[in-house]
Amino acid sequence: MKTPPIFTPRNQEDMADRPLQTEPNIKMDTIEKIVSLCKRRGFIFQGSEIYGGLANTWDYGPLGAELKRNIKDAWWRANIYQRQDIVGLDSAILMHPKVWEASGHLQNFADLSVDCKKCKKRWRQDQIRGKCPECGSNELTEARLFNLMFKTFQGPVEDNASLAYLRPETAQGIFVNFLNVVDVSRKKLPFGIAQVGKSFRNEITPGNFTFRTREFEQMEIEYFVRPEDADKSYEYWVNERYNWYLGLGMKKENLRLRPHAKDELAHYAKACSDIEYNFPFGWSELEGIANRGDFDLAQHSKFSGKELVFFDAAAKEKIVPYIIEPSGGVDRAALAFLVDAYYEEKVKDETRAVLRLSKELAPIKAAVLPLLKNRPEIVQMARAIYESLRSQFYCVYDDTAAIGKLYRRQDEIGTLFCLTVDVQSLEDKQVTVRDRDTMKQERISIERLKDYFTKELF
Ligand code: ATP
Image (cartoon, rainbow, N blue to C red; front, side, top):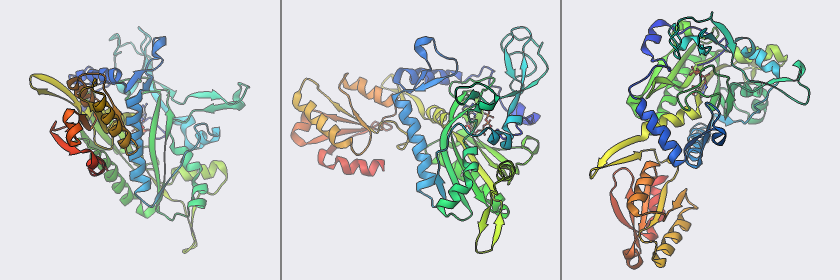
């Protein structure tokens, strides 16, 4: 959880437990398989690939874009549509420079970095153990604070007065809109504001595929509570967020909570826990949940001169709410869901790769496949089925290979159902519906398909 003031050395016990990102790991072949699948099937491509790539940037292809959308939609549904106490926001990436002064980011949003004197590589001090992971030299410079905010200029003049920063978190956009949202939404405490959007951090050592990048998406909730309710609300949100991942099919043994030790907390934070996933490169943070006290509203009140308080009309009292913040990353969630869903299994002496993504997350819900593409009646029937289903959910039509190959292709990208139209379909008006996970096939009448999928998918 990166909350300014940022650098607090991790305690030794914790360090010992956590594999460093630069160390080789026996499960790395899983990540290699995922990287290869992502490229081959169009989940994730290297950024700017035709120019040789820009290091540590990634572009989401057709299926990756769909997966990320599904993750964000599931989050939005769970936190906004299915509750009455949270509203959404979409604030600007560029904000007044004073925001970053008030938040402490200008001063404190930094990691300690060291440079290798021999090969000149720069590293985050807390990610190496005294020697350069590149060349092995232990001749390192003194640690220096390195601010992680990206700088830019607003307008045509590049001077200090036009200096602007790309936001390193979406949260500040929520804090500065606190009064606006209270005014228009008429919410009473406790209530929350949620947003999903891009954030930027000039990470010293990005890596592990999409796990740590300099541009990424966050899903953040700022939940405002009466100070006396903060501890309980914090516990509630830790559980709520942990269960969200389980509810979307993530395996329990791959998920754990790591409460922060006292010396890891920012000075104003009352408590903080990370939800960690057992990635092929070790247990690493997916999301952080923090009790931030009244720090954020108090700071912005001080710096803006506006009183950021909640007025309880019944009790005629002004309250500076405490904030509970669940803050997760879309890209890390996408990577974890991909890793978690990836299986290889033997089917009749052949290896089948299958992505067991949940029905909410699977990019494609069903594929309609004609068994014989040289029979126009079959193709026509398959196309008609595809046309009728696609208004209900995302499905595809594919006749570009033999059925065995089409099944393998759809399994590998996590498509939940394959519908095959064959000669018999022309007579009995039924199709074969094959389940991705069990590979069981059943005949379903075309008439019943919509009802069938309504039951299976929604
Ligand atoms: P880390 O310790 O891994 O750098 P953090 O504690 O700095 O993470 P937070 O400030 O808590 O991260 O940000 C909330 C969430 O945003 C993280 O849990 C993560 O999912 C996501 N996130 C943060 N930094 C990055 C990054 N560089 N690349 C991808 N996702 C990120």
